[in-house]
Image (cartoon, rainbow, N blue to C red; front, side, top):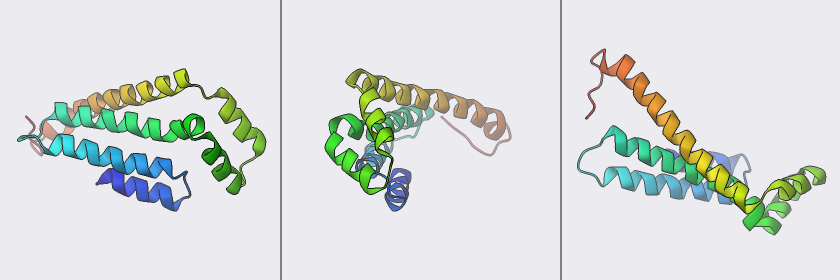
Length: 132
């Protein structure tokens, strides 16, 4: 659900069409992965969040290289400076795509573990939440 809301917001602010689609698809995939389990666990939620972060990173950077003509056309339509567009296309490579997706996934894992620590420290300790 959250991925769908983010996708709609990105669409409303004029993001390239591939980003909202990847957010919505990533959100649905991750929601399905978490909800198909009989019991919710922090581990499954952190894994799904990490996957969502990787999918979002892919959706944000992929069009620059793999959908280059559509991306350039959309950026020109939004009055983005041609020098900026050329530089984005020039520095984006397939190894960079892989690195950014991996960084998105790793950032999701790190954020999930930091969130888990905060959850335990503040909410579980106070008796507001119980987690398996």
